[in-house]
Length: 300
Ligand SMILES: [Fe+2]
Image (cartoon, rainbow, N blue to C red; front, side, top):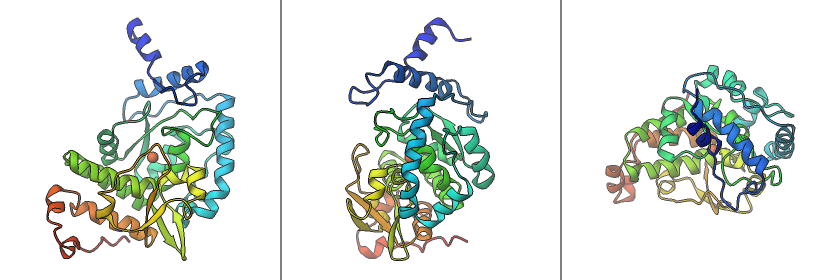
């Protein structure tokens, strides 16, 4: 039973900034609070309760998916496309996290658990260690279907679901999570940058072309269609990535291109496992020779 005082608190769980597309929409704000209550009450490990979506919300999902589908075929790397074909998302209805988990868990052990909104980076990455991917359930405002200032269910499911079904992507997520459990704040920042430039905005070469791997690209029609035109494309260098800050509120000016999908993952996992993110390792990188550490882990 929730007390009257707590009920009032729950009703205002979600704060939107004045420049949010839904800031002036009272009905949207109410919907955000209703959906946030699921995460507020959720107990980790339990089945995820369904979020009941409105017809307008389903229509927004349908509109975005229809737009992104052909862009994925053109710009997304083949291993992720293959998983999208094996695990198709419903076209006309926003799928529930329970639907996603029924498909993800048997494959890689990863599962999505609801959160109200943006989670601080240490909490978010730490969850990955225990195979939990914190996921929002609300959808962006219908007035701006191609824009959201924060992660929403479109980003979580169209961006992350298929890739989390890949065993090596799941492994990279878990290794990042384990590292964070033992990282100080500067080490955490390096791991955060690697998460961002590899799993959110990573690119790889495929048959002489540059293809998208990261979830941030897969869920952003504008950035996906411009991956070879907009950002400066940098050579793959995890030590450099770990020193490269980012701004999540704008289109990314710089992206890093791995030589292949497999190397993107195997070298990232090896980089994390050998502790290249630790202060002691970074301080030791006083010469290029010292920067060349052990060989990447071979992925079978
Ligand atoms: Fe994401």
